[in-house]
Length: 120
Image (cartoon, rainbow, N blue to C red; front, top):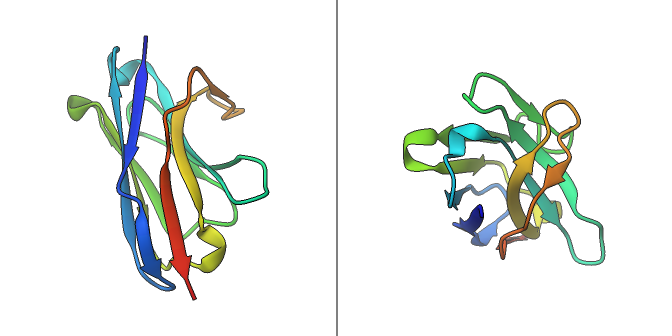
């Protein structure tokens, strides 16, 4: 069974940066396309970014395009989300998960997430 552990969140001022990590265990990361999602207080979980199995293509929501970058290191079984120019509206719990290519719909169990708080 694939397990996901997110880390790297924290409190940062607007305009700052954070790098999130998603460590995958229980299966080879290269078997999966992966995505990052977030859930802000009082809102539904939303898609943030996705990357195909070999890192050859990436996709972003309009709200983070140009500010966030998703990457992966299959040898380390880890997916990353570099977040720059953070805004207060980026405040959320961030999760990674396996995704279906094209729809970017997540599937499988979720990890515990990592909290990102951006102060104004």
